[in-house]
Each structure stands twice: as C-alpha cells, then as structure tokens.
Image (cartoon, rainbow, N blue to C red):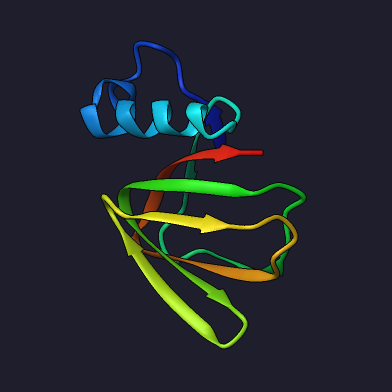
Length: 102
C-alpha cells in the first residue's frame, strides 16, 4: 500500500524522516510516499521506471539485485536506479519505508 504522507502524520514528525524528506527534495526527488508491505510478503523480479531512494522506518526488507542480497533495517537507506531488475522480501513484521522517486 502506497500512501502520500499528510503533514500531521507521526512519521513526518520524526526528525530523521524530516531530514530525509528534505534531502530528497534537494536531490530532485518528488514528495516522499509512505509504503507499507505485509509481513512475510515478497515481489518477484521486477523493475520500476523511476529511481527510488528510501528510508526504512519500521521492520526490514531484503532486496535482491542480480547475485547480491542486501538486508535493510529501520534507519537504513536503500537506492535503486531506474529499470534495475530486483526482487523484494519483507521481514516478519513487514516493512514501512519513506520513498522518493524521480
């Protein structure tokens, strides 16, 4: 589920989220969107027509690009260039992340 973040959302109040959103804007990304994924879920190999930069807020996500798997936990940032084939796997508590796209 993708949700634009209202100005009064508690996530927006986090200093880390605010700093991340400001950095995204300065790098030319669109207004960040809050994405939540269900526990234990996954997406098979796919691509996006946009570059994505995301801050993990809750839970964890494992992203597979080619032969490389990387686990991202709360407080970490991931970056995916546009059209990069990748798969996603969500942790036992699911994942929530703030993502900018361009």
